[in-house]
Image (cartoon, rainbow, N blue to C red; front, side, top):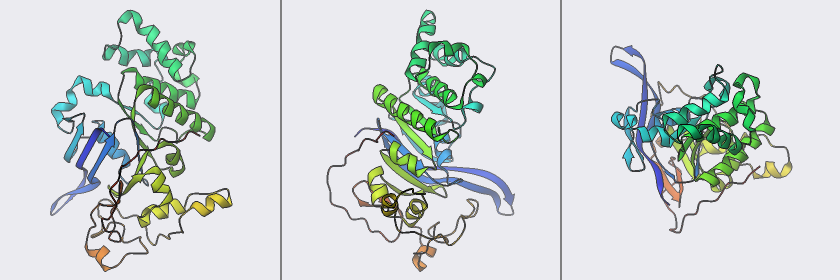
Length: 338
């Protein structure tokens, strides 16, 4: 598999105050390393404050990294000078959680889609209207929508316009920052199915940010679980849901609501959290999860575990698991539509 993005020891700290020893830092992302393959959906899941959106915004250049590398198609985009490259702004696009705030309500949909087409010289000026019609058709909106404004259309339609705007520049990598969390369930399914169709049609790579594990199961090829700025488990979506290893992962999965006895049988044994999420300003020593983990011991309090590959492609950061697996070919399963 070819990697489109390689993240190496990425850190993003925010200064939130000062004391006698100097600045006080909030460690939003604290040494994340991961490879994202071409034409896959790489899911990042975590509770609020886990750092998942900070990774996405740092990749997009909205935040300057504190340390680390981000190699996109062979170029280190963590370097400030590289972010000014015109082709990067074309290749990397983002769809935000709330289209109502990410789309200018004072502009028509035509104006919203025309801007990236002109900015990146996607087509000659005399072909812009034709291209706008093509973009609207890709997201299953009628051509006459170009004359509407976003306040006059529904939430699902707004998000389709946001997706069309992201596609306008012809990107290869799109960050999806909880793109369906503000929508009804029926509309969510339509958006997800359309994103999967577009991925296959246009050979797109997605970084999919969400806190919804049920949605991730249908969307992602591989899933990374974030806790206090670090990845604690990474696996294919199939293995992640069938054989979760980290106590935090099992805690999250066991809390998913079910509507049938069969679904309830598939859930891991209930893991009871025994504390609250610590502040990212004051992360505990040792394993950052040990204050909430019912399986922690004295080693967890003192030593910070390393990420180890316990099975081929299945990584976990926990003292319970040694690095053992049988070598074999790693496959990337396709997600299922709703």
